[in-house]
Image 1 (tube, helix red, strand yellow):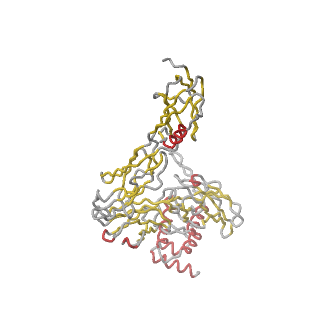
Image 2 (image 1 turned 30 degrees about the vertical axis):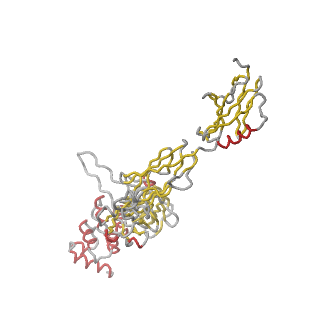
Image 3 (image 1 turned 45 degrees about the vertical axis):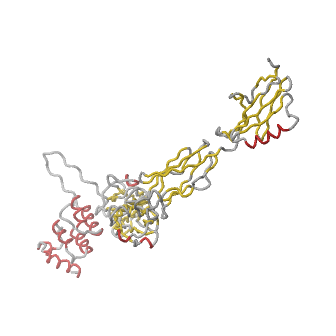
Length: 517
C-alpha cells in the first residue's frame, strides 16, 4: 500500500470513521465521511480528491450539499472529483409511484469533461471590463473547441445580465469578457456547457465589482466658524466614484493651507460606506484659512475655517469706491471693496456679506470676506444717469455706497419748439418775429448729455456778421448744463432747411411767412 494511502487511513482512524470504510478502502463515501475528511486539518485536499476518485460517493449531492462542501473548504480538485463521481453514477431505476412524477434532475455534462476557473474570485472596478478565464479538460488533457456558458445570477447588471458564451482554444482555455456595470456589488457566475449542462464540481466564479477611482467627496461642514462654535470640530468626508459608488478603505488626507493655522495634517481611511471622520481640536486652530481634503493627491474638497467676533459699524464699510463715478452702462474701473472689522480693528475673515444694487448690476449677490476681512465686488452702472446705490449687509447691519452715473457719449441731437420735438419736421415762422429752438443731445439710453461744448460752437456762429442760413439769422445762444436755447430772426420770406452739424447732425425745415401784425 502506498505511503499516502497509509497516512490517509491513519487519519480516518483518528477521525473515528466507520471501520468498514477504513478496512475495505473501496466502499463509496457517505456524506458524513466526506464532512469529517474536509473538517480535518491533517489531510491534504489532494489526498481527499484521490480517495473520492477511487471510492466515489454513496449519495448524489444536492444544491445544498455543493454549498456545504465549498463552505468546508473543498477546492477545485475535490469538487471536480465529486462531480466526476456524480457523472459516472448510474441513475437509479424508477420504481412504482402513485403520486405525480418528480421533476427531472439537471442535465449533466459529457462524462470526463471538467471546467476549472483559473481564478474563482475576481475583483474589478465599476465601469471596467471583466475578463474571466476557464480551463476545460478531460483528466489532465486540455479540451479544445468546447463551447462553455457563463450564467449570471438574478439582478446582475451590465454585460452580466445575460449568459456569456466562449469557445475553448486548443489549450482548453475559454476567455469570457463582459462589462462589469456601474454598480458595486458581488455576482455569482456558474460555468455550464454550451447546452446549459452541469459540469462536475459545479464550477463557480465569484465576481466582485468595487468602486472605481475616487472622483468626488462630500465634506461636512464646509465652513468652521471658530468664533461662534465650541470645539472640537468634527469633519465628515464621504468619498465616491464617478458612478456614485462609495469608495471603501481609501486613505483621505486633511491638509491645512499653511502650518500657521495650527492644524496638523491627518490621514484616515474610509469605512465600508466610504465615510470617515476627522476631529480638529478647537485649541489647535490659531488662524483662519482653508483646509484641503485630498484623495490620492487629488483635491476633492475643502473647509473654510474663519475667526469671527463682534462687528464694528464704525470700522466696517466700503474702503474703495467713495465718490466713484462712471458712464451709464459701463463697469467701474476698479471693484468696490468692503471690509469687516472688529471694534479693536482686527479683520474679520469668513463673514458673509450680502450685496444689493439699485441702478447697477453686481457680479455676485454675496461674498465671504478673505483673510484680510475684505470682500470685492465688480459693479456695472445702470442705464439711468444720476445716482446708483450698492448696499452691503452683514448680520442685519447695512452700509450703503452711492455711485455717480454719468451720461454716455451723445448719440443723437434733437430740436424742440415750445416743448414739442420738431427736428426732421417743418415749422412756420413770421417775418421779423424772433423764434427759439431748444437743442438737446441724448445718449443711447435716452439720457440728456450736457451741451456746453456745442453751445460754445454756436455762440461763435452767432457772433459772425454773416449767417450760414439764407432766411434766418442766429441772434444768440443760451445754455445750461443739459440744454442750449437758440434764438433766430427771420429775415426773408421763403422756405429753408435749418441744418446743425456739430459732430452729430439735426435739421428742421423753416417756412417764413408774412407777419399778421
